[in-house]
Amino acid sequence: MVQFEFLGPRSIKLGQAVTVGLFALLSIFLYSRAGILYIFYANAPTRLIKVNNLPHLDIKFQNVVRNCEHMVLEPSAAFALLSCDPGRDTWNTVMGTFIDANSPPETGVYIWKYADADATSHPQKLKLLDYPASPSDFHPLGIHLHSASNTLYIVNHAASGSRVEVFRLFPAEQAATHIKTIKHDLLAAPNSITALSESELLVTCDHYFLRKNQPILAQVETYTGIPGGSVVHVDLGADEAKINLVTRVPFANGIAQLNTTTFAVASTSTNAVYLYLLSRHDGPPRLTRTATIPLSFHPDNLSVDGAGNLLIAGHPHGPTFEEVMKDAAARAGDGDKTDEKSWKGSSWVSKWNPSDGLKTLYVGDEYGTSCTAVRDSGRKLGMAVGLYERGVLTWTE
Image (cartoon, rainbow, N blue to C red; front, side, top):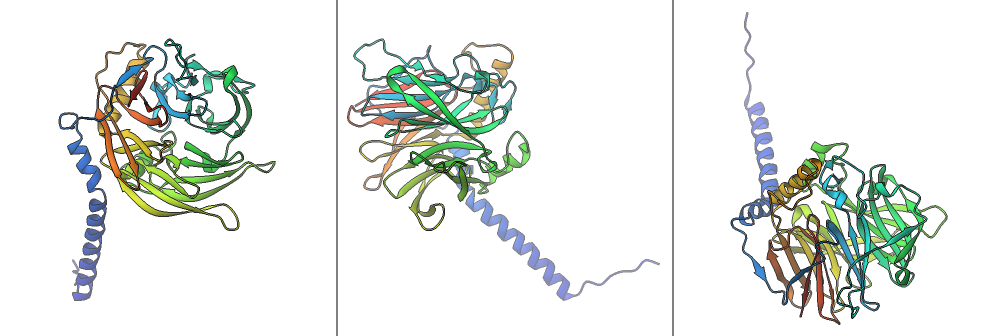
């Protein structure tokens, strides 16, 4: 005999409540991601509105460096350090390219004495002395120079596991001596670094789920804006490094120090830069979010110039950036080293300060995939590098 179960008013109301609750959660999620969806539409290559407020634009050293992810300036000595990895075409742990981990010979950190009178001056590869690992396992990403001690910190996305390498820099000799390697579970996905002192660091880690181990969950984390990324405090003052989680940030990318207490962190998946107040109590420092700078692009790395401007470089259109990455991987995997690209990347550079707010400096595709912009305010010289681009974009004011 077939039996029918009667659902009374209470059951119906419970079902309705669950449906309404799920709909409300979905609405909140879609509202929070509306900015991403709009950017995917408005910044598509056929719709992207180009802007150029950078005077005397030029692209230098296209035959010297490529695939440079990060750049730091030392204005007092007029040199720049560039983190470049042509091996990124076949090995990019953040974006999920795992074809070949062997770095080409030109992979490494470069020093460019940009104020030299010699017009032929160009970036020179930094000699890494006493480096214990194989040079083919060196994939530099974010770098930071603590100027007072000439301590150079380098994020290395090695095939054997990501870590932070510590060097002592000797600019005159164009060399750096390896001091130590820092590996930790909280540094499984390190991206960018800023130093509080010679022995204290803040390191961003872009994801909780790694593309190498959990590719689907990593993609979900990226596109939903889940705060799986983090900022980690590293204390090297003791014999054994002390490492602690400070805060969670969706796709935490670049980090920069605006003043003695204010730090900026780029959140790539939420199209924003978050400002934090650093405070110290017992234990590691705390970061309290104080403001948000909404953006019309996906921010990558950050820097602060001598005039106090926060420079933000990034990518106008995520789907196009992914196609550029796939195209580079396909060409490199086939042994094709030509510049005949199927996809052309675009760049976005902005600056922000508390008085003037946000200003767009450059949007275009003459130079693509911008990931870091820096500026020597005294010499009125700006520079930017691109993750899947050749050379250095420069401008003079």
